[in-house]
Image (cartoon, rainbow, N blue to C red; front, top):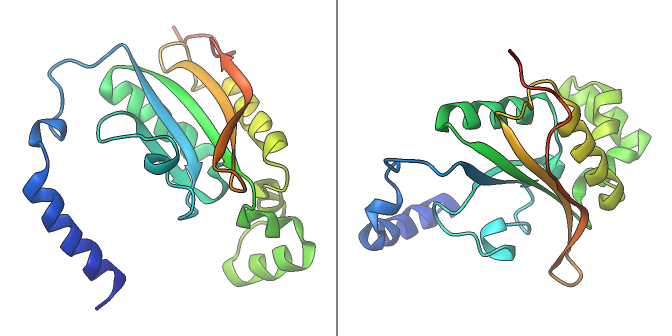
Length: 182
């Protein structure tokens, strides 16, 4: 049996016990919605380390939990589709595997195998999560898609896998830098 077969069995238990009202689209949305951007590393599960339950927050995941064009588009889409402003919490973590992208030999080999761009890959490396999360908060706030209609706030955090604790690196930035489009 594959791991996914086990997950499918767990899904049957979930479906038998879930409150379906928690899965339905609400008749009205709150003005603001929390959204967590976090690494895809299986050790870094926001339901576990933040106690997020079904319907509590949106979650976006990618390698490193990094802000890139796709994440920016996803945040804008969700905000517009749901008619809410997003309170985005960016969480990077210690011991992140993307730190390997700081090694030129690994990065070059990876770029050759995947067709990736060396400079883009180097930028994705999380070697000091306090530094990269600060950069990603700044990047998100400066993007023209992150208008006041899309973004309510942004904060940056580091999950320390050595302790399980989340440390705030960048407190809540109240408003995006980009002006609303007319």
